[in-house]
Length: 225
Image 1 (cartoon, rainbow, N blue to C red):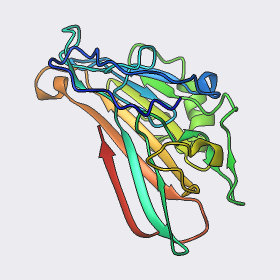
Image 2 (tube, rainbow, N blue to C red):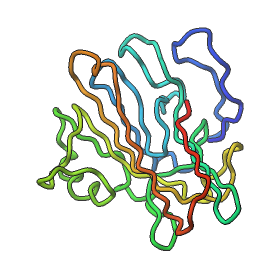
Image 3 (cartoon, helix red, strand yellow):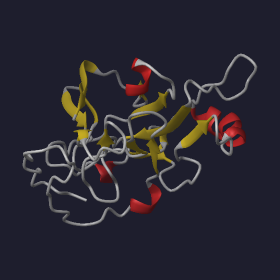
């Protein structure tokens, strides 16, 4: 998917910002999606580095307050840039995403985008169906465990997934199109279903790992919305 004609700004925040989808990505079925909606925020996360964007419509996905039809964020992602062997390399998540599920192996080769184990793992106080897979499969990818070796529920709902820019074919965004940095990102999201200020908050942690076997110099990274 390469919608390069960036959405025009809307006069309201209903989330219905028009844009044109040029094509459907080849890896659409491999990318997993889930919502964080346990408190006053309802937002989307995807295993290709996209968040705060509704994957079904392409419109705004960060609804706040939940159920209001009002949206505070449109489309978010992590951008990273660094100099590697004298060349400036970037990986971006905009309206087209240069990340896919998986990891980079010891030989510098991206793996896992077609492996169903590289998905979003979710724990909540009401749904423990991912408890076993989290403790075994997700933990092997970098998901947190507590001191007893059990899945660590950080909030009322917690998500974990691993993705990378290491696939050369994914670097097709007009704002990028460099060789891969071979970054692996371990993303953990959580939120609390409680009263008070925490009911209006959602948290994300990004563990960014250089898997390229080459040093990154002059590194810049940011969160863009």
